Image 1: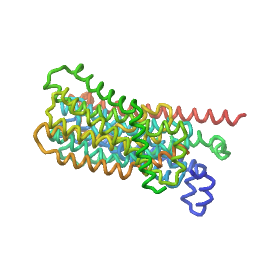
Image 2: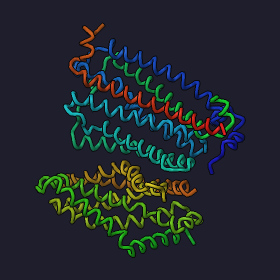
Image 3: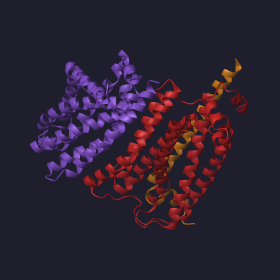
Image 4: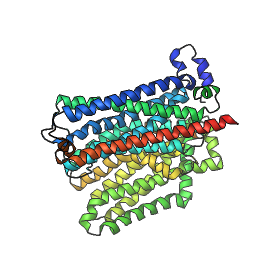
Length: 254
Length: 224
Length: 54
């Protein structure tokens, strides 16, 4: 069922964008894009941290500890966004049968899981002085925890198949099932949270100064660039592993 | 053979098998019983304490027991070759899977729901709470088995299948767990559980509509 | 400059442990990921060169 690369290449040969669905054409382009993203990530991190620590004022309610927000919120957002991107590439792979789409999903998953862990750890460290305890079954922390479980399930499933093609499609299906469930889980947890705890105080719920928001957004874009760079790096590694026999690769990695 | 007679044949065969093989229904029930009786040893036997944790323990126990039955959906058929027959059958695969999951849900759901009120008494829960808990177990088991059928289909005869099934399926059952336990909790507090019951029914219908199709796709992937 | 001294900067109004703990956790996660990325790449390259040689 899965289309081989040469077939899909012939079939869509007329259109330039299909050419990049082939690993041979994508490999060098991904390399350039990766370098660009590492640079963007480094520059934006430096700018974001400078604004965050030297321009943004002390928060009236929380004091200095709010500065965790500059990494906590971007990490939580990225955990969510990367899962959706993973599901998108999984769906694309299942519909079009393009190997590169599955590889993109695999490349995104570890970074997404890492972002979920960072969001959880920074959330706990922020929670201690704000709530008085490291862990609260707060709606957002809880859904991030569940999101982490979904990442782990996806990666464990992909690794459990000896046949790579089978693993690609099986894990893609689970990514889609998870993506359909993410909103249901989120709203269930939110509802459960209000039922059992009343409204809990959220760190960062007070209105933010413009410079605080700027720092947070700059850091978000930095995380975004970092995630793309890491995913492209992993993607290129997978291409090297899977296309070991291809002659174009031997030229490309000389 | 028409679609209806094919699916009803699968449905009946599944129920007959279930009735014939004692281990299929006795083991999940034993597991459920043992899980539910472990917790008092850990938290103590004061009835006020037990009442607080009882609903959650019983609900989670029922979900785990149902989950342990997931491998029996396809694994044995893969070994004796009847899965091949199912895959090559002219009937839509999703309908056959649905018939099979429906049979298992009915048998296992009724069995687990039937013993739930007894366990509720272990935890000093009032009768009306016990009844509501049983009703919610009856509704949650089909939802879990429907969602679980996707994972079971993907992991047909895969190494480490059982533990991986748990990792894949359990996070997806959290909404069912939240609303099922909360319906019983509402009854305990003397409030109306109507909203929770409606949501439980909605989850079941959503799973009913989507999961057999996904499980059919999953089975095609894993047996490709 | 909004900080009176570097000491005040590291102290973060008495919340230094939580702020720098968070940033430290991020740094550890990122460094770990970069190390793993590089290790996976060099493993893949080694395997592919061995494969190429014979």
